[in-house]
Image 1: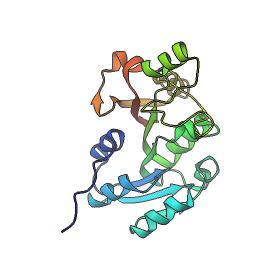
Image 2: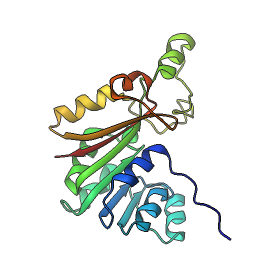
Image 3: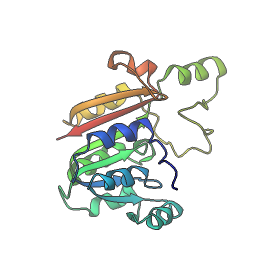
Image 4: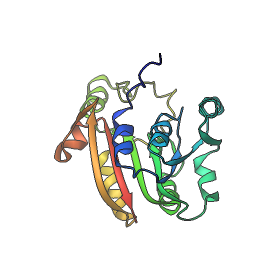
Length: 199
C-alpha cells in the first residue's frame, strides 16, 4: 500500500491547477521535482533545471527529466518559445539579475508563473523595526548569512518591475501560510505571491 502524495506548497498548487494538461513545461529551480511529478500526472511534458546536484539526483531517481544548471547562465541556451509555460517558484530572489531572468523566462515560455516570498510582510517589518535584526520568519526560515536570497523584493516591487518591463500580469494569488490574501492588502499581509505573466 502506498502513502498519499504530500500536499503541494500553496504556490505550487496554484500553478499546477492553472497549467493546461498536456502542455510543455520548464520548471526552473525545480528542487526535488514535486511540481513536475504532479504536472506529469496530467500529461504534461515537464522538464526541470536545478542548480543543486543532490536535488537533480533525487529528481532523476523519480524518473523526472531534470538537468543540472544555473538559471542565471543556462536559460540563455534554451530556444525561444520552446515551452508553453516556464515556471520560477521561490527562485527569483536568488537570481543575480531578476530582471534578466524574467526576460529569459518569458522568452523561453509563452507564459510564465513566478512565485516569491514577500519581504514586506508585516512579520518581517516588525522583526526589523522592533528587533533591529534581519528576520527569521515562517516565510524566511534561515538567518541572513545562510540564505540564498540576495534580492529582498516586495509584492509592490515586483508589480513595478513587470510594469516597467512591459510584461502583462494575467493573474496573481497571495498567501499567508495556506490562507489566500486579497490583492489590496497583499504587500502587508501576504507571505508569498504567485504571478502568471505573459508578453
